[in-house]
Length: 221
Ligand code: SF4
Ligand code: SF4
Image (cartoon, rainbow, N blue to C red; front, side, top):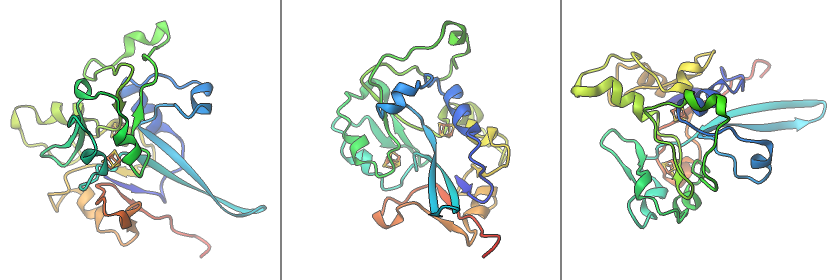
């Protein structure tokens, strides 16, 4: 995935789309205050400068699907591993809730279910039947909307570039996010990957993330 920060307006459409697609319960203010909100993607906000010359910077943060994922090596029950498509996947019914993986993720991309998930009565019928509802006591995180990948590639069929997208990418009103096959040099994501503005977060750690960010261009620079 490539995320162009020059296009991101921090509108949160990706966050809401992810919550809805992936059966993530609605976070109350109290869960944020306790630091226990569950968001598979969040908009990080950074401030630069001092008032009145202040600039806000935004960065959508999700699991980076690291090729050298530090979360995988610490799981005692192999509940998280790399699949053959390069995704860092989580086996919910194998997870025993040690939270070692969450502690070892430098991107804070993993979330622990402290409570059984609940939804308001009127929202129960909108749950996505393709996505497991996670119970109390296990870890969860961005799956790159694996249910959509499975549906598109069912029966081993070839899929054209951009014929489907994860929910966050689909919802982005400014097309800031591009998803696709990085092993095919002709895909949009592969071309964006080569953009000279590109960088990866905490690359120095050697995690080899599969998400690249394109830095914002200063109009007055
Ligand atoms: S971002 Fe965190 S959870 Fe995702 S693969 Fe990397 S270490 Fe694991
Ligand atoms: S790829 Fe899917 S699971 Fe991951 S942040 Fe986007 S919407 Fe959420």
